[in-house]
View 1: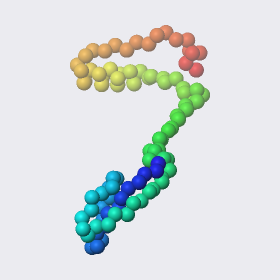
View 2: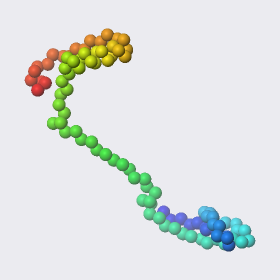
View 3: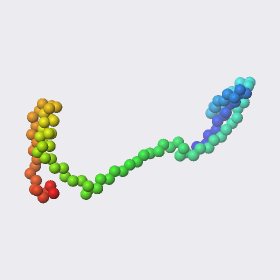
Length: 96
């Protein structure tokens, strides 16, 4: 990016900046400046992440009878509903 602007200076050190050619008071001077900045200076960084869970790290969850009772009791205590948990029949080899 390349841009031009005017720096307006007073004898007491006060300064201001305008984009266009300024109208000056009797005690002001204007100094034209050109500045060139790389466009990348204005680009915000983009964060990126990737999460990979290998298939061999995933194991089937075994729900014990005690855990089933805890789930049923938690649902009943919160909602007052009677819940029945059933699981499809599986071959013992499917779990291991």
